[in-house]
Length: 377
Ligand code: SF4
Ligand code: SF4
Image (cartoon, rainbow, N blue to C red; front, side):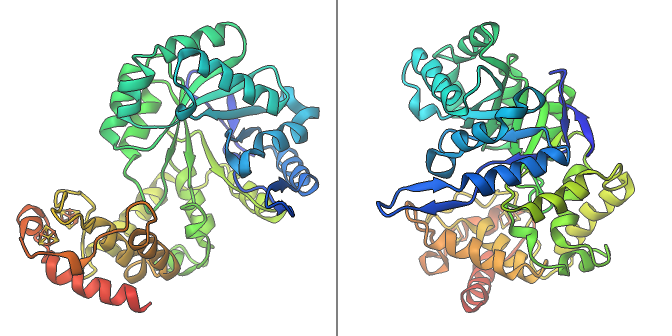
């Protein structure tokens, strides 16, 4: 296992981290769920033996049972590993709620301290309108001084600009957990910024939440031989020197062993290979019939059509050969429970999107074609 400096925290963490959101579970007769502790402990201990020392959970993972299962499994080696968990801000209506939520995690994990305690899944609005005015950064610092938290962290879902805003205005923050993979490099520049500012950077979804995990076609398209796509994707994330750790939500000991082997490579990818992989991904897209950069300038569409999302789904299929991912992305968008996605059927031909697209795409025509293909997959 390779170990990397974790920002300015003084920690050296394993290049592979264990994402504890997919433990094996059983559904009980009363419809509640329990984690299969035996299988989970076996898998976590295998990871520990292979050198994984960073374990990331959250209060709600695995039907609220992940922290308990993780705490039980790691009890014998607690002082040799780092535990990360997360505070859901919807639970925090007063400053006191923050400590109460932390105490609940400490109790479930059966430990006296959390190594990295995250503000969970925040965006700029939550940061500006809740965390800062409620004084939660100062509260976290107080609890750090009291020994309950070792490092103050946040996980993040917003634009790169918002990430910069949070880093610049949250000097107490010591590490960030964010999305980054071969298919979604939007955060790349800010990963470098965070690292320069001394934050540790942990990546979630290094293999696209398992999405990249299936075929080898992508590696072949990129001229990377017969590498399994999960391996190519993990190597790519770890090939970025500003990334401290890639989390993987592993579900069995085999996955643990496969990922640990990649994270043990001294050089997962040379700088030249890393640049080449990124460039090849871009070129594949560029020379395809539909080069949408995902810049979002066409948004918002007055009819609510999320054009880049639909084009992205098509690119997964048409350019990268990731057809299952394309179907999942498209249908998740169209059938979204809370907010079903608008499609070309809703287009009123206003042409606003085409006026704003720097690639001069004939968006209206393309939407019809692309959706026809996606719906027939
Ligand atoms: S032309 Fe259609 S897709 Fe483009 S902005 Fe207007 S309604 Fe939206
Ligand atoms: S403006 Fe054009 S390139 Fe940018 S996201 Fe929209 S369709 Fe894609």
